[in-house]
Image 1 (cartoon, rainbow, N blue to C red):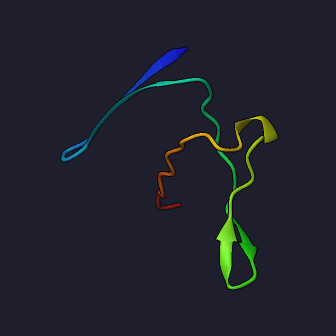
Image 2: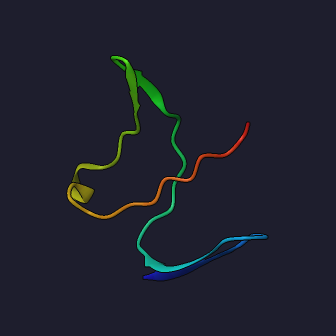
Length: 52
């Protein structure tokens, strides 16, 4: 396990994590989705939206 410390002007996030990766959000009907590996089904996750 690794520890992620994210510090911004108004946000601090510190959690033990197993994996960090970046994926493109894709359309899904009238919504959107982000595919994750099957082994992480049911896990808690953070999604951070950033400007391109």
